[in-house]
Each structure stands twice: as C-alpha cells, then as structure tokens.
Length: 322
Image (cartoon, rainbow, N blue to C red; front, top):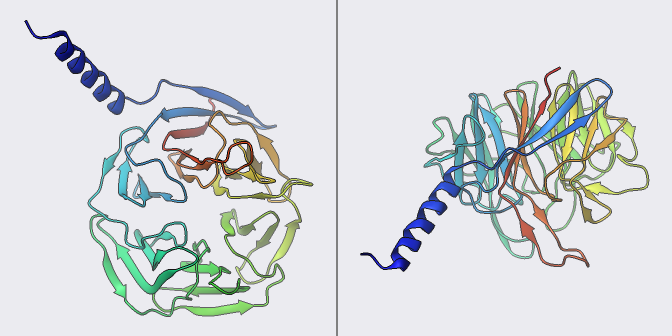
C-alpha cells in the first residue's frame, strides 16, 4: 500500500493540472446604455503568461495575439492559449509598441533599460509568419523617442508626440513602410503629447488623453471636450472601438485605479459603466469576433495600497442577445 502522502501529492498534482487547463467559472455582469446591453464574461482566472502590465493584444488573421515581455501567445477563442516561438523583439514594452500593419506585425525601435539609463536603437522589426522576426532596418529614421502609441491610418503608420529624456513632442510623423519616416506637421493645437491613445471611429481619428481631439485627415485637429469626466483626471487606459463606440478600459481616476469603463459614441459625451474585474491600469485589449477581449494590468501605488498587484486574468465584453 502506498503511503498516504503519495496519494495526497498525486491528488494535488491532478487538481493543479485541471486548474491550469480549465477556464474560470462563467462570471457575467450586464451593463446597459440607451440602445443596447453588453455583458462581461470571465474567460480565465489566470492565463499562461506571467502577471504583468503595459503589454499588447492584437487581432491578426482572425487570431488573438498577446505580445508580452516574456514572449507571444495566440488563441482563437480567448480561453485556450498557445505560446509561439516568436520572441519579444523591442524589449521594454512600457516604452515602445508593436503595431499591426499590412497583415504583419511591426516592432518600432528597441529599448533596453529605464527612464534614468537606457539604450535605444531605431531598428524596425517585422514578422509575417508569427514565428520569427526580420530586421527591416537597423538604422531607420524613426524618431528617437518613446511613450507614443503608433496607429494605422490611410494605409500608413503614424506617430503623434512622444518624449525622450529631455522633452515631450508636438508633431506628427508617418511612414508607408515603417522604415522611412517623414514629419507631416508640428506645433499642433493640442500641444506636447506623450502616451496619447489614438483610435478611428467611423471616418474620424480621435486623440485621447484626459481631453479629446478629432481629425478627418490626421493633420488638422479640433477639440471635442476638455475633460473626459468633469473635475477628474483620467489616464492609463487602453482604448478600443467596438459597436461604433469608443471604450476606455483600465482608467486611473485622480490617481486611483478604477474598474469603471468609459464609453462614448461621439468622443465628446462620455458615460461610466461598472465592470466586474478588479481595478487596474495598463491593460491589454483587442476587438475580436464582435467582442472586446482584455487581460493584464496593474493596481496599487496609492497610500491605501502601496504595493502593486498585477493581473493575468482574461475577460470578454460582448453585446447581449435581444
């Protein structure tokens, strides 16, 4: 007869294996607006990647991709994830971004270190097979800066603002190939910008910070609102467009992390919707098969919660059936 502790150990391993492979029990929360209802569903309590924040998620070729500091994972349902051989090429994802472009993923630049001491290289990476990277250029004329979020508009890659170790920028650059960059405009009406989110809703671009600006050509901008929420400072969110609405996920409100989502149909008028996931900022999100899929994030650094807590759960938001 085997000793009791062996049976206990085997039982524990079986429970652990099942826990790692099984998605979380379905947890749903309904949110409503004047025209539709939406529901949040918990897909995973803990995904395969390490708990972290400020990484990215994309929908490419009808597959979800998570670009994490430790590597790359993909899924066709948001529940079951598989690790790709594709490594993290640009290194510090808190400073630089990947961008989907022309059925591939581009990595803009290479950043190693932190704000006090770092190495930056204007390399341009591209993957088409999602397994390996090719270096398109080791010395492109990509502006040597960080804390910007590139976006695609009119079949070009665009950059607005950003900063380096000495200043923030107030200009717009774009590129047709990710290698050759040209400055399109400077001295913009919204001033110096760093960390702005830019999304396209219908025929307009929206530049999102604590205020909102819009443009139909990427060069000429008008202000939609001076504040997302009157009397509050909002930052640290991810912005996506679903169901002809802009959704801001993981908002920091007046220095406090929140689980409330901000939603707008026009970029000018915003409302808050409660979400069931824990308060956090720096999330990764993408729209996939009519749903918003979200993971990651960070909470803490406040007087009431000085320690940081990181996440790797996975949630989905979708429109409810009538």
